[in-house]
Image 1 (cartoon, helix red, strand yellow):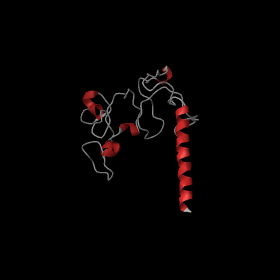
Image 2 (tube, one colour):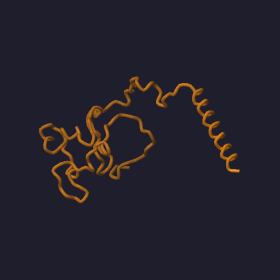
Image 3 (tube, one colour):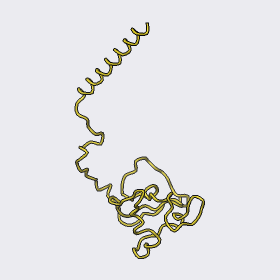
Image 4 (cartoon, rainbow, N blue to C red):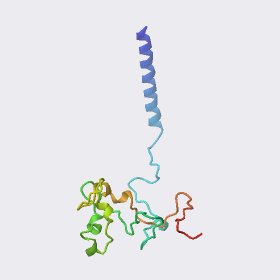
Length: 147
């Protein structure tokens, strides 16, 4: 009794697999959802260009936006290129804003001489500013804004 059932299930599985392969082969070329070929260069509209100067913060304790491009900045487990200008030891010489002292506190609140591991990847909170349209309608107004 078990052998015919097992043979039937095996035959069905093989038929489904072969049919799936045939369908996949006939579906044509695989294309990216983003449009052009992955090797091609995408042209960025002027509206999405990096803005000069600094934007004001919209709420208390908002992480500052980055007023320069970070396209070529290396940021991994061993290297953080942001710190070559913004670390407290070099910021004055480079004319760059110094990191907040909160970036030098560990999870228990102990003061460190280097940036805490929890603050190592700057682009978790800080993003480059750009003149780009909002992705979602937003009616946010800061609490101290006049009505």
